[in-house]
Amino acid sequence: MGRFWSLLFLMVPVLGTAVMVAPMVYQTGMLAGHWLPEDISAYNGHIVDSLFYLILGLTGAIFIATGLVLFAFMWKYDAAKNDEAVKYTHGNHVLEVVWSILPAGTLLFIAIFQMDAWANSKMRRPTLPGPDGVIGTSDDIPKPPMALVTGRQFEWRIQYPGEDGVLQTPDDIYTVNELHVPVGEEVVLQIEAEDVLHSFFLPNLRIKQDVVPGMRQFIWFKPIKTGTYDIVCAELCGWGHYKMRGRLVVDTPAQYKQWLVDTFLEQETTTVRPKEAEE
Image 1 (cartoon, rainbow, N blue to C red):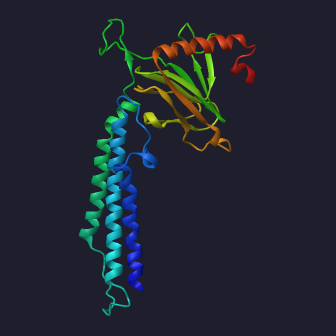
Image 2: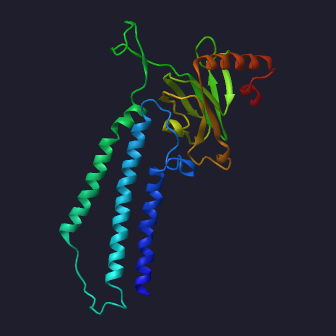
């Protein structure tokens, strides 16, 4: 009966490996997007995906090796089949050094491997040419935000500059839980929190940034495919956290411009703007 349990435990790494590998091999039907949703990012998505699969492969290999070692020990030292007396041993210093160095080296490798993903997402904000009119020179200026996204319990408030191109002016355009951006353009968003800690997550663009009250932060991305995608709050922010699901609509440039015009006209025909209505 003891070896039956050994075989039962062996099924853990076997089935675990099948669950991990099958979605990588078969990307259709129910398994499509099992690990990651469709990537529509121009430059950062494939780096994040490579990092994810690298870590998944490393942890998967350790999981399989640990499961096989556990099975081997349970099989060999089954009490019903093994008459050898119990032996007690002290720690092995060489082994302890090895299994300390290997994880440290692995983590260092991952830290170096992810530097491009971090820089693209957090440090290399898109710029516009400065007074000299040439991009890539020292007088370049940061690209202004296309919209202001404010997380609050329990919705995403989105504010676009009007014709003057400046946020926080009377001609601003307001929406709730619906963010429109043009395809093929580098988009910069200013994100803030009104009340508690939120996390602005665009799964299809591999962008996730905690939104901290009192802090003005920026994110940027370049979508390469039109369509409607999810906006998610990835931080437990209160009882209504489940309601903070919005829509990212990637339009063609012409559709985006028309949407801005239509939304502004619709907003002007109402007696009270969304932001003022809440006040």
